[in-house]
Image 1 (cartoon, rainbow, N blue to C red):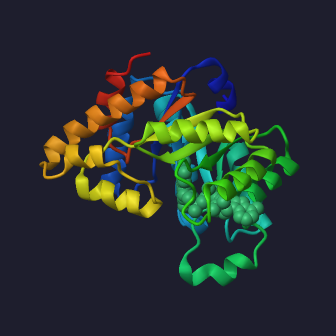
Image 2 (cartoon, rainbow, N blue to C red):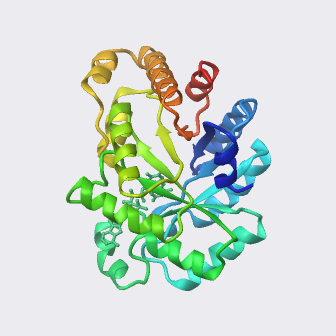
Length: 286
Ligand SMILES: Cc1cc2nc3c(=O)[nH]c(=O)nc-3n(C[C@H](O)[C@H](O)[C@H](O)COP(=O)(O)OP(=O)(O)OC[C@H]3O[C@@H](n4cnc5c(N)ncnc54)[C@H](O)[C@@H]3O)c2cc1C
């Protein structure tokens, strides 16, 4: 089923994100995770895609596995930067052959040593990919796009980023998924601001339950997300075990506040582990 249709009937839609594991041991962990999350009846799940197609085959393989294991719709992430038409065509036809009809259309990050290669190629921005897919077959895929409540790190300003987001949305995006964030008020301001600019699509909030202090600092640094001081105060100087428990409390409070304020979807960055996400979902108030 297309995610845009799920988002019309389920408020909020619940989804999980997985990444393709790189070793047999991690593959087992992913299957165990899916087994334990299955009972939560997610509305869909997504599988990430390595920049420049580094996990292309694996992403597709696991997207198929996730559909089977969770018995739900799947969305494959697809980064486009550096790709040519043939590469995109092959991926789209594999998705079609496997009945995968949801794509998160992304630019991807450009490795410093590949900037020249990327600049010579057709796909420079996620909007180029959305345009290409829509021109090929308007109805075949439901397309999500990424958005950044704290602005994309390369953007000079929030206004410019929203201007670019509007271009992307107008090429045919069906719904948006946010970068992970911890400050709901900032998200609500972003939601209001993009609505004022004429972006009226469902916005799915990206939630990452904190499990480990060093790890969350590394992730948030990587994606330029801020951690509010009040969150840092709760997890600083705590053991990993205590941090994971507090991380669940924080994600529950954040999710329930989002539900109260009419969020369209909650997308949990599981990191292929189930414990925290499961405990958060058990405490949601619909
Ligand atoms: C929910 C989510 C899932 C993700 N999953 C993955 C994944 O699976 N694999 C992966 O490698 N990365 C993933 N990423 C990271 C993402 O690839 C990076 O954040 C990347 O830097 C931007 O991708 P985008 O699709 O948002 O790019 P775009 O929408 O193309 O925007 C990128 C930048 O270019 C600017 N811009 C856009 N259009 C124009 C234009 N026409 N002219 C000038 N400037 C423009 C934007 O303002 C922004 O600063 C994910 C991010 C999110 C939020």
